[in-house]
Image (tube, rainbow, N blue to C red):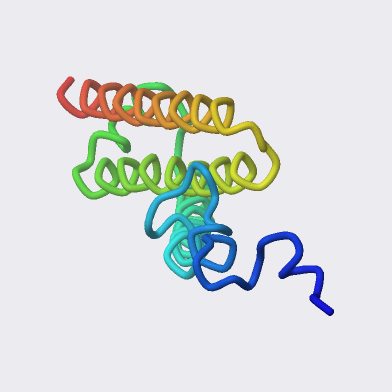
Length: 140
């Protein structure tokens, strides 16, 4: 008497039904999951929270809050670099979260791939735009 696996062609030794590739997602790449995205999400969240506390403390200690005062503050090299790092951390944090949601809940491969490419392009364009604005403020 044969078992169900043998009757259906499984456990035969020559098929691909037991290979490791069988369970690999259709749209995936090396490093898409695991410790690295988790670490990026956590470290970026810590930086975002710390930077927001810094901005709130700076606003609380400012003698006047005007456009010229803001422009002078943001034009300082260290603040400018911190804001650029904030933009990068925010987009990395958003990318990891968006990518995880798409990978978990969008099942059709073509749609998943399209959404990943589209969201990646939106995040890249947002980063370039924010850096352009930041450098135009610091140059003026």
